[in-house]
Image 1 (spheres, one colour):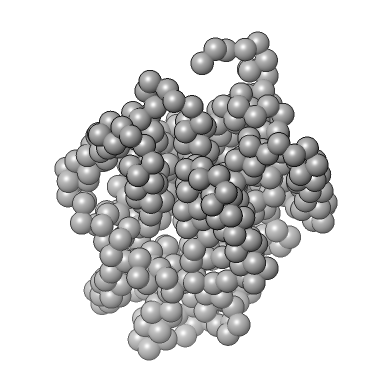
Image 2 (tube, one colour):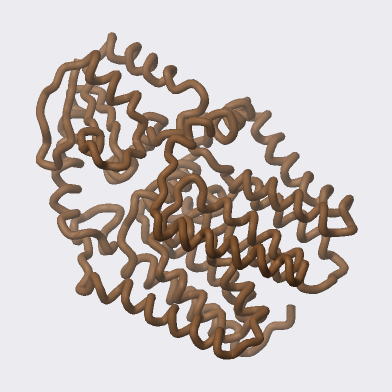
Length: 435
């Protein structure tokens, strides 16, 4: 790729914009903490599926962990590394669609969750769309490589994309070889670590219970149906094989049909729209809509609240009341850990562990579908531990709010209520139990 004089400026401007948006303008979310936590664990030598649980492939988080290991425990460096990585993607997009790429940056600012494995896969999807736009000598080899990166990050999208690539390209052998080689290395590492079954268990066998997370926001369901309709209609009219990638990328929105997942599915669609649309009035309307949406999203919550306490999320934009909650809960856990084994059956478990410079474990991410095919083994581990030592359990307040959509697996609440004694309710409304 020929380097142009202003490429460095475009790249640095993209990195700066992404860093400011991700750290100072979007609110801290649990998903961001979990993604940072996965990479933090790997940077500290922990092995996914063996030392901690996740339901996606490790490629994205391992890539971030390589660089995260150079820094101390602070989520700012997670934003910085991602901004540097995604800035490179934006430079490629800018080289393809020019100033329209700036509106994709604005669209990223609208997303509730900016940096995670879904965003990484979305940009790899855009790279595939760019690759498919011209016949290049090394096209099938690079395509297979990109597909392997997607598969090793989000397996359902990777498998779907591989099928599309094999059906729509003539050089199937080259694609398959370049896809399989990195994957064989990946599986070889899992075998060496005696970790292959754990990977299969968490990423495939346990996904049945992951469907229990199904939730649907009607407005965003309608948006997703409109996207599918327009893409399907476009494919019937043009027979453009790139649209098949966009259609199957909408798996991103299932089983949680909300703003983040639907908008994430829309990101590659917007790229395709800007790169193919010839009607100026449609482009103008879309760009104005993105500008207005970006301004509305941020101005509605202005002025922002930032955490000032000494923590790994210091100066990060947070929701009002965060500092008080964070100080109280981390001090409480720190105090109780001097006298007992503390289990955090809470959505904020990773947040608390990371603040205490502890390595999160399986019991710190108990979302439905995140525990593999045998959830009962974790209850057996608790019972075994608590026969030998004092245990304290903190149950998320969401467990006790009837109308709350619950991500935490209810099996832990039921087990604790049946077998352990109530102690107190914290100011955060989380409940404490003990043996």
